[in-house]
Structure formats: structure tokens, C-alpha cells
Image (cartoon, rainbow, N blue to C red):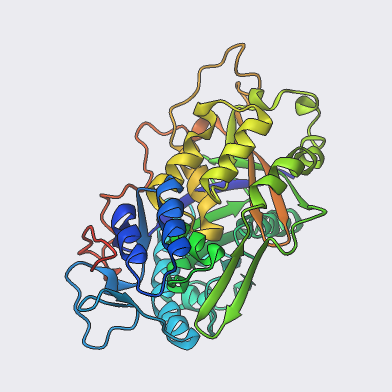
Length: 417
């Protein structure tokens, strides 16, 4: 049975962190050693990020909180709120993003009514509360209270693929199913000043954002699907369990992102792709470069560099991943959906001898994401000809949030507040 992605939309909080200004704040913290200060400058400057979004409103230029918890503009000090304080903000701000992204995905699929949703899958690894985001979406959007709800928590950057794979399975089991998938992450809640290289790297990379999709197998008259969901695979690399992890500490969640992660991916990416590509006879033995589109989770610039070099991909094939990283940073599970959205908004490619996987049947997309374990999730999609829109709808930094979200007054900001 063929399963389709019908809509894919994104949302971000309005507060924007400008990378050089954020670097200046982190580099000026009094507790840094000489090595720590050097690492801050190196990590921020080499991240290939211009801007990121954060739900921590204290970081706006005009914000002057009476009792600052994250940043004190009077002293220039970054503060260390407890995990509870951070998680309370997650419960409030992540709910807004979950609902906004879900509503946008529904609005982008007019052939689907709120009451048509049969399954809801939510994803996040940056906070917890219950009743959770699945419940909040049902109430806010007026979904059927009997909708089947599932939450994938604490899986990390690769979790969008297990969510889409579950949606595909639901639709294959029930041809009438309509599945709403929503990922929302507030990674910036957990940034802190430190001399630890992993913590510094996380502060330079991570950001906040959400993405939502509607998945069906049933035909919707007058509605063109965007993607065909072809295959998914999971591979655990034989090494790397200690190199990438996500732990709960007293002052927020703690990222372990060892500098050896890009080398592990470099060594094992070919093997991780093999079971996926064996699922499609037309791709067996084909040079990786001949698969037209590559939606790679931009876990960091060095990861993208290693993947591009190992697979011999062109600069153009890395544009969706690199531009997502540049404009939005690493938003954990939501990020790869931003990359796929970028590809969907590209003009239609010309069919020709250099586009071996494009044609009347659509353009092939090979996608991958990496997370704790070290886990490599891979997926094959087909971008359908009818999905080629005349005007791209990809969220841009200047785009205003949807009315009614309470975030209409977005302004560029810096970490200096």
C-alpha cells in the first residue's frame, strides 16, 4: 500500500539569536578558562550558523525581566536556572509551537478536516509534562477526543523518522487512517556557560523549532500529495555509544556531543545506507551523487562535510541542509523536516541524463538523521510531480507567525538582550 505525506509545515519562536553576538556573550563569562574562552570562539565561529530562534524571551533586546533567570543584562552574566524552571518554560512555550505547527499542517491540507485525524504522534526530547503535547493539540485544534495519541520522547535528533515510520505503519494497517505528526524542540532552554567542550558545542549549535506533517494512504479528491513515503531503516553503529548522549542534570539537560562523532559517521555512513538502498532495485549500485536530493540532518557543519565527502555529493545537494543550519541551527528532531521542506520548495528539476532518479514518477530523496547510540535513521522518499509549487512557502526569518499564536511582535534580537 502506498502512503503519502500530504502537508509539511514549520514554526519557530520569534526571538532570534545572532551568532556573533551570542558568541560575544558566552566568551565574556567570568568562569571561563583560557582554553574555554578559545573553544567558545572556535565553536561559534566554525558552526556555519548565522541565526537561531529561541523561546527564552529574556534574550530579546528590549526584555528587562524583574527577576532574570537565564541572563542578567545588568551584569552580562548567564545564569543557571534549575531543571524545573527550564521545564516549566518548556510546558508553556513548546505547547505554543506544537499547536502552531499542527494548525499550519492542517490548514495546508484543506481536504482534511480536524475530525478526520485518526492518529496523532508527537515528538520531543527537550522537556516533559502531562497531560502532554498530544493532549494539548487535541484540545486546541478540536480533534476527535478518541484520536489515538502517541508521544515519542527523549529519542533525540533522529526521532522524526520513527514518527513518520509509525505513521506509515498506521496507514498500511488502516487505509482510512489520517495521521498528524508534530515535532517540537526547545533546545535553547538547556544552554549554559561551561568550560566543557560538549557543552560549549551545544551552546553554539542548538536552537528551537517545530514541524508538522499529515500522512495518509487514502485518496483525497483534489488534493495533491507532496511525497511518497517509500522506505525507512535504522542502523546502530558498532561504536559511539558514549560519544553522543542526552542526560538529565540538576541545571537542565546535558548534551554529550564528542568531537569524534563526525569521524564515526564518516566511517559507518556507507554501511548505514546499504540496507535502505537495497530496498529499491533501481538504486542498487548507483553512485550516491545520482540520487537527486539529499535531506541530511545538519547536526553540525563537520558532520555535513564528512557526509558530503564520503558520498561524493555535490555542493548543490548539500544546500538544503547547510541553509537550514545557517538560518535555524540544530533544532533536534524537527531539523530534518525543515531540510525536507526546503527540498519540496525547490523548483522542479529538469529531467535529463544527470538526473537518473528524476522523471515522470517523481524525484527521489534520500534522507538521514543521527542521534544518541550512535543511531542512524535513513529514509527514501519520492517527491511527486504535483507537489512542485509555483511559489515556495518555506518559512523565512522575516515571515510573521500565524495570527492568534501570541507571537506577532517578533523582532531581531541578540544574546546580549
